[in-house]
Every structure is written in structure tokens, then in C-alpha cells.
Image (tube, rainbow, N blue to C red; front, side, top):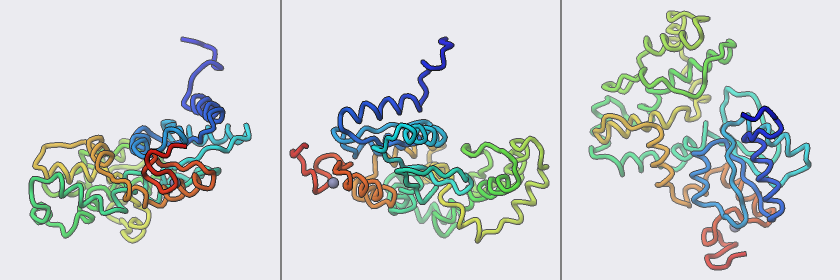
Length: 292
Ligand SMILES: [Zn+2]
């Protein structure tokens, strides 16, 4: 162990190093929150004009951008997850996803969800929906994950710090594709260190304001819901969120990806700075074989 903090490599110090190197090489830097974002962008981003760095979390991206501002550096762009329950807003060359993260943005905006379900299904989607007594995949998603978002929302406005990211999958009743309120209340009370009782949490769930929730939900835990839907459509016992992320990453085509609002903002910025973000052959400004 090296006790000298100055030598400690953190995601932020590494990113600043990458920024400096990119400046020497006359490239721009794309700062992302996580490795799953990196893997999606890496398929399409030009290696000769851009460097991609992921920083393991929004806090690290925020720290990195603050450091860059102090250094008077601005040759970076960042795409950040939009969590309506997180009030830290990062400013700079930054755009936020419309939905809770990049995967949710892809699944929500490009009819990709249906495509993935249909392409990976061994059962007829309509039959699966029928068996779950649901009219649409949206309804299934909402039934599975919205109650947990509602509890998060409650915890946020009441100052109970429960971990935000992990979705407790055991609250899903797999045979009915529904959330079990009693299980959700129990886990929520535990995570809130019993500053709210199980009964109290259950009352919160019973009083869900669906209109408000629909506005704030923005695709939270969509990959969890997608994993569940893929598992039942395939008749497979279990597919994790990781498997879904992998499927999204390998299936998304450039024209769908390019149409996302946050991606358009990034591309526009890159063109303003004469460094097209896309690999040669994907964009008119750099046809294949015409490397600059
Ligand atoms: Zn271009």
C-alpha cells in the first residue's frame, strides 16, 4: 500500500491524465459514467479523433469536470444519467439522458424493446402477454418496477437514505409479473433502517399517485424489467440485467443510436469543434477510407 495520496490513481486523476494526453494528440474526450456506456459508445466512436473514458459514477464525472474547469480545459463532452431524484446538476460541456440511463433511453426511444423481445423469443409475445394478463409490455414493466420507484421517491422527499441503484428482484412475483407489495415494504423498511415500518411503507405503496409517478419514472430499472420479460419470453429461468445490457449493446444499430437526443447533442458539439465523433464511414463528413 502506498500511503502517499498524491500518487493514488483514482478514476478522476486517470481521466485528467487522459485529457492531457488527448490534448497533446489533438483529440477530444468523451467522459461517461460507467463501463456499460463505454461499451455502447465504443462501437461507434472514432478512435483517431476521440478518446472515451468512463469514471465509475456521476460523482467522479462531476469531480473530474470541476478539476478540468480549474485547469481551464474544455476539450471534453459528457453524457450523464438523468435521475430525477438526484439534484446534483453538473454543468459544463454536458448533456443528460432523457430517461434514467443510456439503456433506458435506447429501450424507450427506438421501439428497440419490442424488437429485442421478438427476436429473442421462443414464445409468441402476444401469448406471453395474454398469460400475464397484460395488454402491453409497458404495462408489465410498470407493474414490476414502478412501485419500487415510488418508494424511492418517498424516501427521497423524506430524507431516508436508501441505496438507489440496486433493484430487489425478489419483490417480483414471476408467475403474475407483478410487484409483491408486502415484500417490497419489508425490504424498503430494512434498507431505511426501520426509520419507517413495514406497515408504513405498505401504506406508501397503497397511496401511489400514478400520474405523478409516470412523469418521474423515466425508465428506472428498465433493464431489470427487460430481463424478466426476456426470461419469460424465452421460457428461460433467469436472465440478468447484465445479459440485457449485452443484448442491447450488440443489437443496437447506428441509425437508432444516432437518433437519441443526447447522442445528437454530442454529435452536434463534435461537429462544431471539427472533430466528428463517428467512426469513418458512419457520417458524411468522414466517408470510409478517407481518414483525417
Ligand atoms: Zn460527422
